[in-house]
Length: 290
Image (cartoon, rainbow, N blue to C red; front, side, top):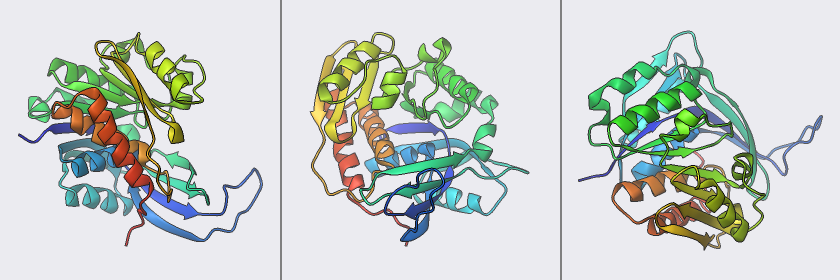
C-alpha cells in the first residue's frame, strides 16, 4: 500500500532572481537572471513527498488569477490530489520574490494572499483522512488552520509533523497535537533552546525541545541535522558534501522525504538519513523551469 500524506499549507508563485549578492538597505544590485517557479512551503513539501513515493492530498487555496494556473497544474502533473484546493474570488494567489546570491544562499519576501483563506470546515470530512498516515503543516498559513487540521488528524489517528517556519509561537493547544517538529537553528533558538552553532549544540537543542514535543529535528545547515525522540533517544548526522547550486527549497525536500519514510514505517534515524540525502541532491541541482 502506498503511504498517504496530507499536506495543509501554502502555495506561492515564486519569482526567482539570481544576483551576485543580496541588496543592502537602499542598494540596487544588477542581477544575472530571473525565472518563475512553483513554490510555497506547502507546495514544495507536497512535491517532495510525491517524488519520494507517497500518495499526496493537498489542502490549500489559490486566487482567481493567472498565477493560480501554475500552482494547480504543477500539483496535478505531479499526481497530487487537488480536490481540496479552493479558488478564492477577489484575492490574489500567494507569491514570493527570492534573491539567490553567488553562494547559493537566498532571502525572500512572501505575500500570502489566498493562503490566508483556507476553509477549516473541510477538516471534518472523514473522506479527507482515509488512507493518510501523516499530516504535514507549516507556518505560512493561519494558526487557526493548522490547529483545526492537527486536531482533526489526531481524531483520525494521523501523525502530525509541523515545520515551524517561518517562526511564530505555537499555542499549547497545537503543541498537544504535534508528534514531530522540524526547525532550523534560528527557529530552535526562538523556541527556547540555546544557540545552535554546530551539530553538538543542535543535538542539545533537540533534546531540550523534545521535553515538550515527542520528536524534534533540528536542521543545522552545512553542519548537518540532529534529532531527539522521547522514546528512542537522540542522534546527529553530518551533511553530505555537494556543490551548492541553490539552498532554496532544501528544507522542504527534507521534510517531504522524511514524512514519506516515516509513513511507510521507517525508523527515525533511517528516515532522517534518507531525507538528508534527498536534500543534498536538491541543493546541487538547478530548479529553473524550462
